Image (tube, rainbow over all chains, first blue to last red; front, side, top):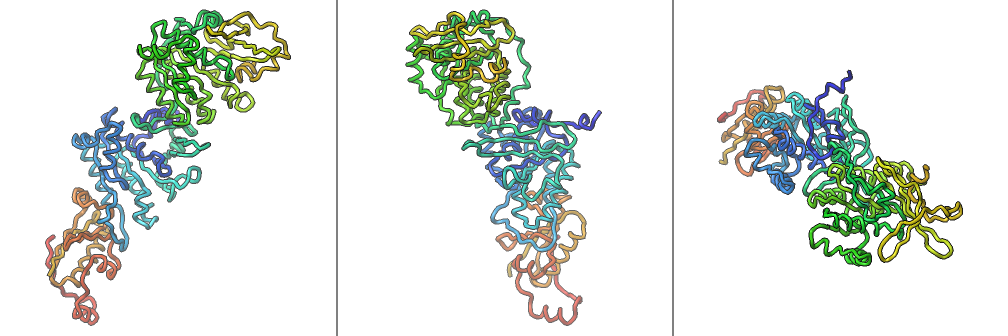
Length: 500
Length: 114
């Protein structure tokens, strides 16, 4: 047995964080949460208290050095947390240590933080708190300029919190994202447990991450985990927020892909709970296949949700009408919801929340995202992979037949990111590769089912023709020789074809 | 004469607590011939009072009267700066002379409601 097994945890209840922390914060101890301005420290700390009250009925004390209690009440009210009501019910108490202009004090001689400590102890005893937040130390250091005293006193405060047996979060500022843990080096003397929140610009995109730097003696996941601060759901760590759920037993029911030929290739359609990745360069028939997939769902009486990027609703409807699909009518009948968007309007994390919320609200049986590749413009491959993992968990739990499309001419190529590409393919149940090439002045198209988990599938690469009725899958393209194959404009499925 | 009223917050019976109280009494005694009020509050025993006046550090002396409230943090080891910070009047001439003559022999009227 190791020490790790004996360390009790306090679940924070913060979306996804406890999975990163493998259970929660070390119980009965202080944890330092550091980050630059605007990195989400106060939200994290505040949610630690609110979730504790809501989920575990554990009262909490919020010691504020910076924002006045009124501001904190207001901010959390917008997330649906009734702080004022909890104060009245004795579940929440503020220790208001924010400096007011009229209380500025000269410092003459030596001092300690005895009054603060007593006030915190008093508040903890009064409401029987088991969680305490101190937000933030930076404000204390700014106010009491003798850093030596502040350090010593913070250390005493931390040990006072230890003696009280409360699980606490102390927040502190950092000067920069990747340099040192905190301003004033408080982590050196305050605590065994350190969490860093980051808020960085990557390729002109804001990226928020949370990292557990140390949990003395307690196991935790390493590395930076993406998170977002959602106006409705608060702090959400991705993707682990949604992986803890038990997955439903695999479905043996088949549903139509919307293309009889493709259904045959897949052994009679997709499994109801399948996640399908459809890969192909632009113009190979991805959007057509997506539209037919939605059309088939609606025809079977299912609710369908589609996310499409880089196209306006009008363009999308016109395209669909060209194939005899009346998107507008389906939407009016309430069976279909199409979201048209440009990836740049939100971060990847926000998209995840948007998609998940649409899934929860609309309760579809089918979901299409056309294309994942559009989102590569706003994210790193690793982050996109996280998104797919997270979405996979959301749709699997609800047994939603899901079609993701992707363009292989993107960053998901075997050369640049082989492991990511392989991982992406490994996350989906069915992988379909569309491709086209030129032959004798004609465009020739092919389709192949590269992978079909849990089912037999057609091993042939088949010819495809596209006409006004849609896509028709024909005979095996056995005539293709090596030269023609070399003409392919892009590898059909990165990391998959390459492996065969 | 304006009445002076102080509340001194200390944490337990430490050396620092008693130094702060002694320094404050000496200072007030020498400068406030008209008397003053001083209440010493131990925050460990009465945290509610520290909460009420939002005190963080100990010792902290709060001049409650005359208004506006004035605060000084620390054990007041520097009497001149402390007197200035607390807005106390200058030492009366005769007191200063007496002090010079017989250091330690201090007679001051004190009227304080503890």
